[in-house]
Amino acid sequence: MEQPAISDYGYLSDCRSGALVSLAGSIDWWCPHRFDSPSVFARLLDPNGGHWRLAPVAVGQPGHRIQRSYRPNTLVLRTVHHTAEGSVAVTDALAAEEGARAHEFGIRSPAVLLRVVEGLSGQVPMTLDYRPRPEYGLVSPYLRELPDGAVVGVAGSMALVLRCGGLPLRVEHDRVRQTFTVDEGQVLGFDLAYAPAYGEPPARLDPVRTLADTVLAWEAFRESHRYEGRYPEVVRHSATVLTGLTYARSGAVAAAATTSLPELIGGDRNYDYRFCWLRDFAMTMRAFWVAACPTESSRLFEWAARSIGRVGSDPVPVLFGLEGERDVSEHVCPHLAGYAGTGPVRNGNDAWRQRQLDAPGEVISAVWRLHDYLGDQLAEDLRDMVLGLIEQVAANWRLPDRGIWEPRDRERHYLSSKALCWVAMDRAVRLAPQLGEWADVRRWTGIRDEIRATVLRDGFDERRGVFTTAFGSPELDAAALYLPVVGFLPATDPRMRATIEAIERELGDDDGLVHRWKDDPAGFVLCSFWLVECLVLAGERERAARLFERVSGHANDVGLFSEQIDPATGAHLGNTPQALSHIGQVNAAWRLTNPMFD
Image 1 (cartoon, rainbow, N blue to C red):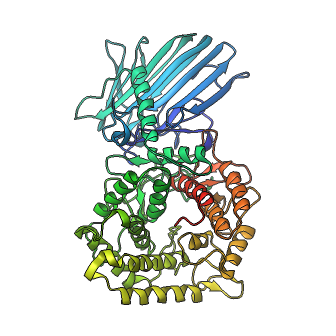
Image 2: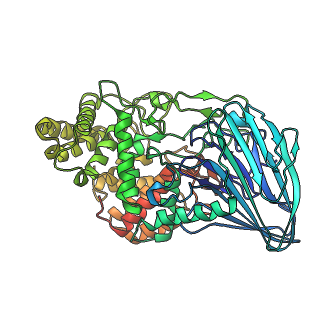
Image 3: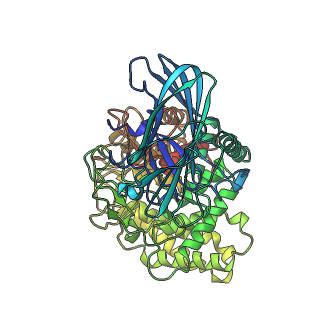
């Protein structure tokens, strides 16, 4: 099988887990228990990783055409295949719990994949190829036909049941593989239900009726959220994608739905992004605030407070599992070849062990953003968490760290980390009235001012006339674009303006994509949207709008962004869909709408 491009995949979500379905109709990634659980399908990462293909026999043949789109305001994907024999539509979704509406959506998702085939014209030969491989492809389950035409598979810790009303399914050893014909007006509903092997049995649903109810659940969710600003369609869609990356039971937002999709084909920067990063916290909160509603922001905040717990002298981890787990140690899956043969495939992420000094600043900044909703005095546990984070910054800001891009070689005095330490102390001073007698405003103000002076002195290269990646380094880093966004320095300041221009000139390209550093192999979508915000803040609103539109044009045909874009080919690289890319799009659109938004 030829490896589909990353941009060929559409994304399905039930706010519990995510699945990727290719243009050719193959579901090549699904971790049914939750986003960061073991997969059932992993052909995304290895030809033998498991898949479920449902498509016309004619896919890939001359004359075959595909049109696909999401149902508006949903992650329900409809793909129309036009063949020489006729046309057929396949609509894919992860099922919502029956009757779930608004913020109930995703809390009790039944872990069922829905696929509904509808004959539009003619008689279209179809193929079904179902080959589950649980535990990241390690397990080949026993498949058994049931009297009602369904197929049950039990292996390891999970049970799976595949059903289709009106089409008896037949097992070929370790897979279901058969052809059938769909006539004009005919509708066939397939569902694949997951359950733990030793718990309740997999749910049994009517796929056609459940699909219609899932569409209503998504529509009701979006109807409860309002966005009134520029580029409303792309903002609403990005907000829908962010909702689809949210683990509804806790409120955590996964950084991406996948693991180990490479930043460079043939490279080794292949990491697991199915966790929630504190670094992304303030940006995520801001995007929810703009394009969703305070409920999502509040739930994410509650998750963070519970996950961080009581703050001691040890650094707070920069990332957590979706239910607040701290230890997400990574290991390599040597039996998986990796996307396009690019290994290693990793499960877990050892960045949780790194010292990253910017994380407290993101959390305290998020508290400041919500301060009007938190009352005149912070609750005791929240107050203690904020005070603990403030004291960590006060004690540790002079130390080196790993920085925003999480290198695994050595620690340095990264400019962006120091700037976020300033953010932590600046927001702490602003929060003083709500911290009451525990606020040490005079000391915090002194530390804040010392951090600022240090960054301006040691982070600015007088010879080049720009802010650089780390103290004493001559290298440019697109992370410097974050400084005006968080209010460390105005974009109009001559030093900042020169830095923006240098980044645009040396790290940017003609398509508007911005690389993180000089040798970064592809444009980083978030940094490109940061540049949009910086141009707005520098007073170049129309040029910023043109850049926004160029960057937004790099989304795939159904509006999804991965982490990076190859400027030479337009290929998507890195994990997908990437939360930070969509967050960047939402925040840049709102900056274009309201330049003074903080």
